[in-house]
Length: 372
Image (cartoon, rainbow, N blue to C red; front, top):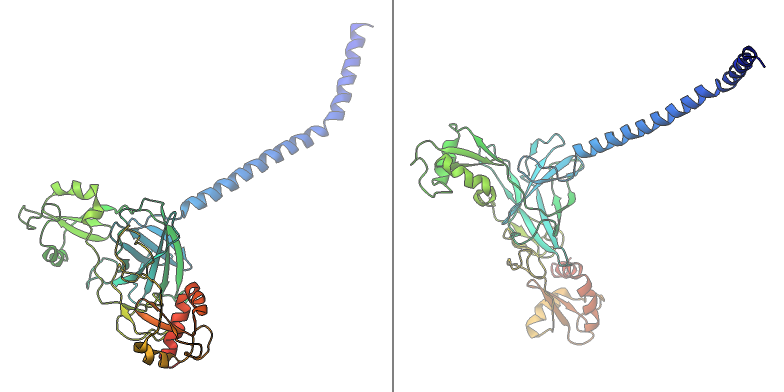
């Protein structure tokens, strides 16, 4: 076959091949592009999700260097310091909200232990015209607890929100890093300087070394005698942060520690007489979270046989809080006490049920003693 004939045959073959393949090429290319675009879209979607998560991480630090938890329309910033735990309240736009009428408690559980250490939160007010945010505080020594080694559960009531007057949230403990910033002195600082009187670093009289230095620890101002003291403040700001002092005595119920009021009276739940609740003391079981920090009440149950001295209280209670039968019908009533409160049972067979749920049975006994 001549070269010319060979070229003609090859030309025809190429035309045929192209006509067969050409419909498939756009389809294959389109399929490939679709897969690529889908992968890119998936990647983009994943990246957007990660960015959204990064924008609102759990424990995002706020103005006081604490950990933030969100519950409905409210944000709670918790600042963990070696000797006290503070709770600040904000709205969804991170604007401060007063906790003047709020109440609450903190339950702390150290890793490896099932014991719950409970502390009441007391209200801390701020002075007139002060820019310091008011807050709730529990005085508890956590200086020996390592970051991540304790779960902290908060329960707050009477919050200033119609939609959410109560809130519960849980955090993992970690000591807070208090932000330190220099601030300009102004006329409003005169009262604070007069109250502080001395430099917290050097101990000398403020003003004795010339111009004072104002430092904000979170939003709490402190005054230094000179800039030379600033380094120590920056190294350990928590050590120089003034401790909170509750503005009023707090009264609580030994059976219902969530009750916290400013006046002595009776528990609105069970009718028992309220008792003083010092900030930092709680209805704890076992040792305190600070490995030895004192507890006012230990919830320890004692069982004994009632005596003639209990006759009036037995008559007032009338019936066994477990069985409901009249006391004395099965012999001498059994007496159980906890945190200075007493209840009476018809027999030893009822002791086990009280031990499983003491709060309920002591509350029932208090209602019986109150004639309810």
